[in-house]
Length: 450
Image 1 (tube, rainbow, N blue to C red):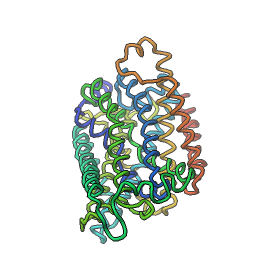
Image 2 (cartoon, helix red, strand yellow):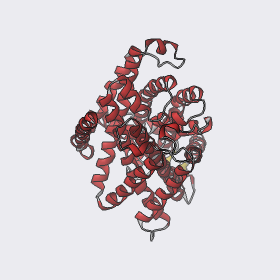
Image 3 (cartoon, rainbow, N blue to C red):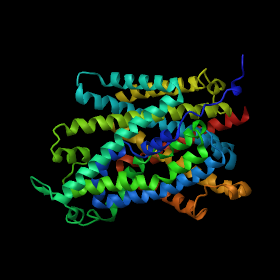
Image 4 (cartoon, helix red, strand yellow):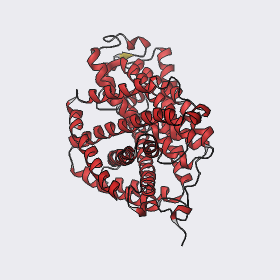
């Protein structure tokens, strides 16, 4: 019987897969649904919020990109943390990233069940969620290319929707479109209380939802070990992030608030539905429901992929049960995939029983955990520059303004965590999340002794 370590992950993801995975990771339900709450909090200044968050995360991604060009590997966050910070950091970061996507997966699977009920009210929520998980599980069990194809088409749907909104909306603004009590004009951006209508506090509180909207942007780092020509495709995907942020976030929000005044939008509903309804599309709610359904399925697909790869790496490094490092005949970490999927199914059942308050709590916890992973990437990058100075000097994809910008972005992450304490629905996460890290550090003591 061949040894497990004789098999390796196959580089089956092509340039077009990586480009679309990078876009899809930065566009999710946080934009399509969460932007309603963000607009309600900050008004037109929400565009500045997304721009600031986007710039900070671009530098984080440049740090990750430099590390990936140095060593393209799946489960890269844990490996870089282990190599450049210490074994404890690799253990905590690997399991934390797994936990991030499990929580995100629970949220998105349940969301799929809710969205399907829009068309089929009699179908139980748990059944839609179960079907979604099983279909995505089978796709991920096939080949890594099947995962890439699914993400490619999911991302295309999101991109087409946003571009359609921007183009049609721009025509409406330039034509001075009028409907009921509103007129499409750029002056809507400052005519209803100014650019900061809710003052500095509203502007600050919007950062939490904006950061949550970007979770998953680092997914390129998990795909590196299965990417063809990573030295070329990964830098290209990362360098295009600022353009995507300007178009898909700032551009979409600018058009939305130009067509309809920000203070007339319902924070609990999608502003995309409002705009498409104004255009005169009778099935606007159904259209956006379909787009958000694919966005949720896309996030779940990414969650199943990334958690299985992280368990595979943790198994290889002895930080998880030995069987998790095995690959099947198609070089897929099948057991790791099954374990992550099983945990997701338990999560759907638990989430079905828990009230909405706890659901908000777990997403807040997930946001803090993602910030941990992003922070570790920045610290590992600084340590890489110091410990591997010769290799860093030869690296063709250097992070600009390092190490100073690393500290600036780390300070920004601390600021976001502090902001979580301002809102009552996210404050509890600051007390619960430390329990996760304490449990991990205790578990690490046992692993270290073993």
